[in-house]
Length: 286
Image 1 (tube, rainbow, N blue to C red):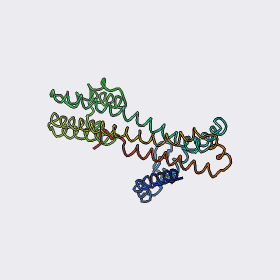
Image 2: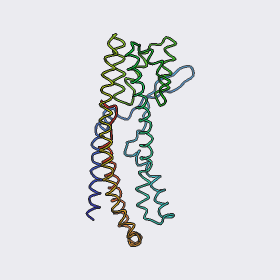
Image 3: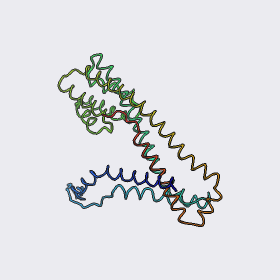
Image 4: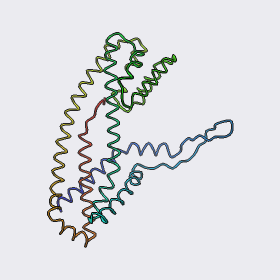
């Protein structure tokens, strides 16, 4: 019981922290209201129309995402595995978020690899006295991820005499990586003011090495935290495997036991997510 109460406490803490961090977005939504601007088409011209569109809160969206897999997981546990539906509800509910997070992390890693490759090549080009235009055009073959197409498009625009500043402005404002936004903004400012690009890119590479060193330290800390959490999860899992017949009989007779089990599992998941978030390595951040 003490273990389950501890998991409930962790679940409540995780939900409270998540709610508190989203307070600014809620205030912004309240200040702006629910109005959105939409385009309406009429023959021969486009007109702007004010349209009231329903918006969905993050909590409601997450519930809608999780409810289908949770129900499917519960049915699978009951009909196939002959286990409590609590296992399916919890594991099925978090499965889509784990999948989305994994895909996002993989894409972000690919983006950061391209960002690092582009900055390393910029260091070589600027160090040899090259220009920003040469960097943008010649770096394309060295990029294999999400930055390949934007740089290739910018290179084609340069051949059409479109200034490179527009491309750098987009990188400096829309890049998902804070460090790369800062680097692009610095390159743009030095290019426009005829600044010392060689000196600036040297500072960027020094900061990049510092970021990578911190990343390795954070990854080691995250690995240690995850090992501790897995040890915490393994103990009740071993208890369940050792007394599964008795536990399944209790769960089959008392719905309250299934509710307590679901809360306990949710607490363990919340604890794992919270620990992963606070120890997650932050790369290319300023």
